Amino acid sequence: MIPRMRAVIVAGNWKMHTTPDEAGELARTIARRTDVAGVVRVLCPPFVGLQAVRDGLAAEPAGAGVGVGAQNVHHEASGAYTGEVSAPMLLGLATWVIAGHSERRRDAGETDALISRKVARAHEHGLRVILCVGEQLAEREAGRADEVVRAQVQGSLDGIDPAGADAWLTIAYEPVWAIGTGRNARGADAAAMAAVIRETLGTLGFEDAGERIAVLYGGSVSSANIDEFMAEPAIDGALVGGASLKPDEMAAIVARAGLTAQARAGTGRGGGSAGSAGSDAATG
Ligand code: PGA
Image 1 (tube, rainbow, N blue to C red):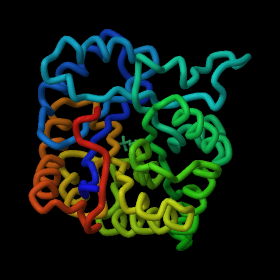
Image 2: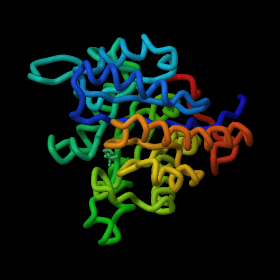
Image 3: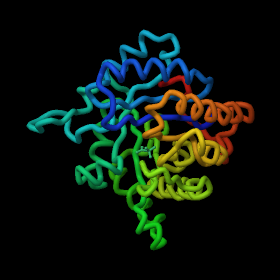
Image 4: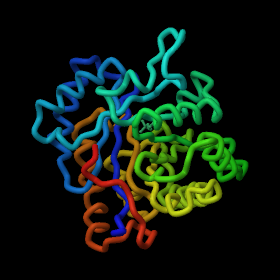
């Protein structure tokens, strides 16, 4: 098998922002401004904006390589679940989905056990999953960050078949205290946590996949700090919240990610993991 490098991914989580009209327009603008070789771009609008984003990207030449993701998915395929959206319903609208975002853990009471069912369901229906994990401030201050994140990775992937997971699974390390606060983690701390995540994946049987699975950083990422994360070989990109609504910010963030993608392509190595393989950068 030809060794492939881990993909460099920049995903935008628009959270509960943008009407469908705004979402379509924003997607086109961002696509135009972020057309950088080697970076997988993913835009995650609210459910009701998915079609508009798809349409907007289809109408934009630079939109061809941009993936569309949902911000959540139900753990069942169908049923009496008022207000919910299932994985099969997303087919044709999204190819990616975010699972276990800390805002859903906090606001919707999502547990690792529930998240593992969402991950399973999403994978079963062919969606690529960005699984979010991350500790609270008190947990970090108590020196428990590694332990908390390890448990989240274990619990959220419980029962998931590790075989071939690098083709569909991405982990986003998002320390809760850094999300939407303007206070980002240090690059070195994020890289250390990426190592903990990969080590945990290894213990779960992901083995090589643990090296091949992309680990993103998320939490107040902006054009001002993206360099700190992309300079870390263990970090494969970013999950961007607030800044992903701003085309200038996304342009700068993806441009910086592109430098890492180019460097990896040049050396044929996946940043700190010799011979590592990853998803191909063209699959949005
Ligand atoms: P933020 O959000 O970039 O606004 O901190 C990140 C996220 O929640 O994914």
